[in-house]
Amino acid sequence: MLSGWYRPPMETPGWLTVDSDETVVWTDQPRGRAIASTLVSALVWSGLVLAFAYAFVEVFPEMLGRTEIAPSRFVWLAAWAVVAMWVLYVPVKYVARARIRYALTDENVYARTGLFSTAVSRVSVADVRNTTIRRGLFGTLLEYGTVEVSAGAAGTDLKLVGLEAPGHFRRTFQEVREADGEGVEKLSDVEADRKQVDDSSQSPDGADVG
Image 1 (cartoon, rainbow, N blue to C red):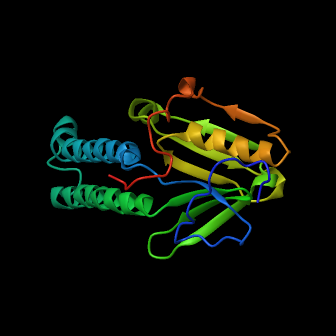
Image 2: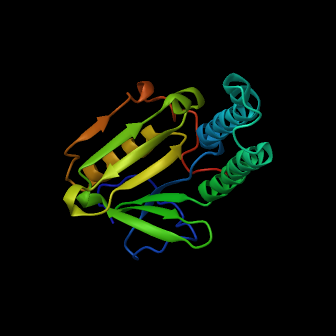
């Protein structure tokens, strides 16, 4: 328990087991819209595969003066098989993301992952040497980001993906470190915190993916 911590403790999530003197101060989960990049990738690659199949069956043979380069039935079967894999991958990825949970206590950062079986990874707050916020094109447009928590040689790194308010996690983490009297050695942004308002009107406690 941090003597300098002034926020009221949060309820411990059912998936998390903590020590009796460990206080949960932040919880969250990836947002459903964070799957947008995967969906767009699926659409683009499926379109490219089908376009290539059409060219292989209809365009290339004519250019080469041949009836066919390969059996058209085989080409289309292979193309639609690839598209089917993408169609299945997107909902599986969505469900896997929906099951992810994050938590920050006054001692550790936790991440629960897994689709059919779950695993909880942990990084000690005292071991963290760097936190980095990353937002790609879709993250900037749809207002979500990833926080990379690096423990360096001290332990396993964690990636907190799809957070609606990554800046809120950072500020809460800083407060924990400051309350513990350690301070953060290095906190860097790949992209600025967007004036630190990405979470000003959002709930930090997480919500259902949707």
